[in-house]
Amino acid sequence: MCDHRGVNHATRARAVEGIARLSKAELDLATLFVEMNRLVARALPSDGACWHTVDPATLVETGYFVQDMPPPDAHVAKFAYLSGDFNSLIKLARGPRHSGVLSAATGGQLERSLRYRELLAPKDIQGELRASLVVEGQAWGCFSLFRMAPADFTEVDQDFAHDLSSLLGRGLRAAGIRARTTGHPVTLWPGLVLLDENLRVESVTEPARTWLEELGHLGMSGRDALPFALLAAAERARGPEGSASARALGVSGRWVQVHASPMAGAPKRIAVILQAAPSPSLAPLISATYGLTARERELTELVLQGCGTHEIAERLFISPHTVQAHLKSIFAKTGVHSRRELVGRVFAP
Image 1: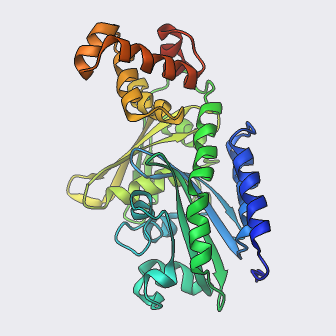
Image 2: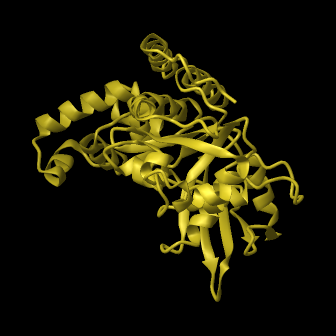
């Protein structure tokens, strides 16, 4: 059991300084998770931790890192991220406060949470602190910290986790830029994975095997858990919206599109399409990764469509001079010097 006593302001200040440096450290995602977890653990000691990257557009969990916790599986996907449960990561991402302590949210009645009953109580976990890692209104990841009974997290811990939200989110956002390398050939066909009502594989096409490997899957045996991005999207597809989609970084650095939908006439069975994420779907993601404002993203989209300065000005109801000012800011943030370079930065590896 962790010893969470004696964490003072100086310790937390040093943790904040270390986390602030991470976004500039040019670490790969796996190393970044390890370092983030190490620094957060100094300021918020816990008995276990689970971190996720998320697609900022759909808030579907894509990658993960765990410490002293089992890897997330289909059971976790079913109960851990329910939008209607207390402190759901979607609510934390979209709300004014991006962190929450489960005991406080439930008024001290932890049994009110389905997540607690199914996942935490069986492991004798009483304290849970969650945070969505939000930068400029978009969530790039999340974490959950756990303490064994009778320990719990405090309101001060919750406030500190909220303060860390944007710092940690900036690190994950920056990692999205560095991870863009070439992966499988663009000619690789989409693949189909058909899951039964227990999210076990019923059938899989040959191209899907390659895409599963790209998402970190080592084989098709029942003992090898499916990629969590696939499980999370499949579980979301069982919800009210009836489908779910996410863009996940593969092991080669290539973006993979994961789309899940229920089978007609059998809503508990889920079909998952895996394919290369098309460039148009990546453009908003990459634009957000570089920290462009909403107006700059609009303008970038028009540049990518081949629009000239005057056409952009007319569409956005701004002056050509303002267009040029926005372009100057966009060039500075993305590290390019021309529109042609901007197109290459967004679309090319």
